[in-house]
Length: 137
Image (tube, rainbow, N blue to C red; front, side):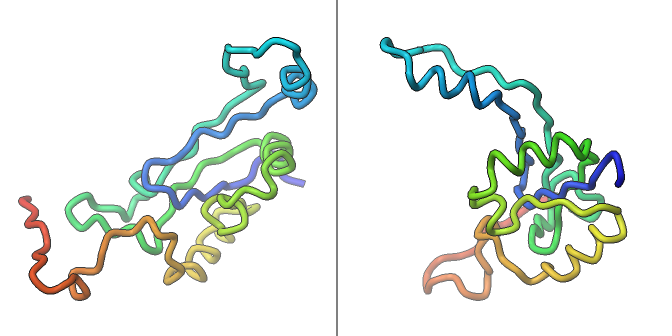
C-alpha cells in the first residue's frame, strides 16, 4: 500500500482538514461547565482548491471539471475519512482521494460535467434584464 494518496478538492479555495482526538471531544461534551475554548486538532492538512489547478485561469474563472490536488499521507486520510464519512464533502465527491495521479486525472474526467453548486451562473441563462458582469483583463 502506498504511503500517500492524491486528495482532490473541488472547493474554489481549498479547505483545512483537521484530525481530532475523539476521546477528548467526548470529554468536552460530558463536562458539567461549558468548555469555551475551541478544540485543538491533533493534526491538520491544508488542501489545495480549484484555484491551484494548473488549468485554472482567473479571467475565465471556470470551476467545472477542475480540482486542486494535494498529496496526503494515507494514514491521515483514512483517519480523517473515518471521522467524516457522513459529511457532504465526501458523499457529494467534493473531496475524495485516488491512489495515483493518473487515477486522479481519470476521476476528474468522469466528474467533468458533475456540478458542485459552487460554479458561477451561466451567462446564457440569466433572467431577463440581468446583464453579466464585465471583466477586464
